[in-house]
Image 1 (cartoon, rainbow, N blue to C red):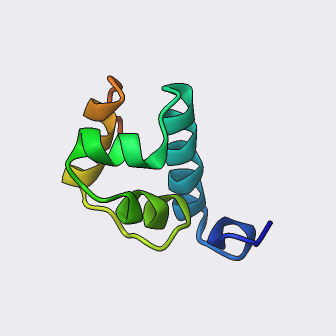
Image 2: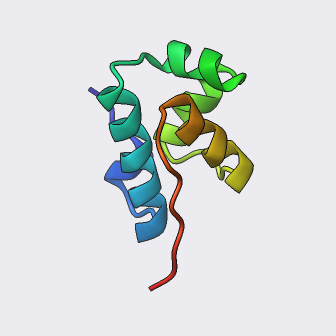
Length: 77
């Protein structure tokens, strides 16, 4: 299997976002294509998000949360 951007030197917050996006999708037993359809986006965008190649807007992340019946929680520490 090839390496994804998460295997390299992504900033920590980007790594957390890519891992969280994969985890939420898999927790719902959704394929990338199914999630994309629920969100009204393309499977390519889901792939880019999960590989750290997409810098999503808050609106995109909200659609992701809504598509997975989850709550989006963004905070600073």
